[in-house]
Length: 327
Image 1 (spheres, rainbow, N blue to C red):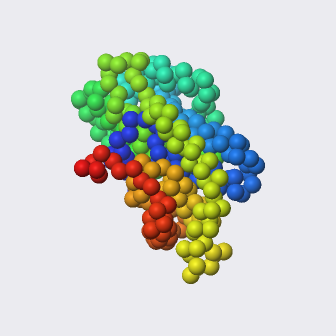
Image 2 (tube, rainbow, N blue to C red):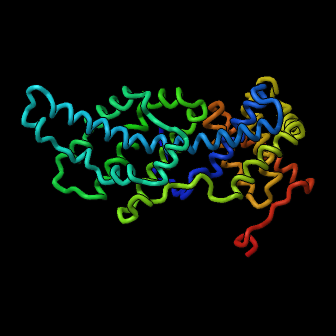
């Protein structure tokens, strides 16, 4: 699986990429009869978003849990009946990691975990397996053998662990799936936020180091709400537009997810005049590639492009030009 960890530059946890996906997931549940009313659908949407923020803290917590496991293992070896010299004088660089120590003391981190009751206590085998995978990695060996010990190196080892070990771990995927159905599709992007958070840590901030907030501002909340409501309200009308522009296709054979993605895309294209059409198209094409069939991106792009052209001809599509476009 390809990731774009280092390409992301978000400074808040829930962005519009995630919000679009959450709206589509909520509508999928709604149309499949899992939610009954529009109000229930809206509650489901924001519950889903909040659970994604929980995942951010749950994944951050992995660094603390793995470190605690490593420290416990050192103590067990020290207390053996016949400890070796290495048991009595172990290399404690990993368990003395300055980034993890700072995170362990972080006020926001601890308050949130306590409030939401987040824990890995039921997954000791997952923690054990992760640490064993870490121990086998070349970058861990280099870290433990290096004479240079500093805060930057302590952050860097954990960025590598999340990127190369946690991201690839089927065991963690299974544990996450057991904990919440909302987390399954979010792991990759939330891991990118965890890595971004580690990069932003500054030693001088101590226990008050800021973690990523859930939303950038109220505008993003309103975006998600309006996108959901607009699709629920106008979904049938948009379905007619889609049917009209797929006459050469057997509509019953078009993937339901493709139709749903196009309905949400049309809501954004029509109801959000400040968002350029090409931005909306690109976002939903990427969503289709991830959540629907192999050919969905190309198919959706063609259908939406035709609909947009039709709306423009009928003067039914109004877009506010940006400052730069006006110039």
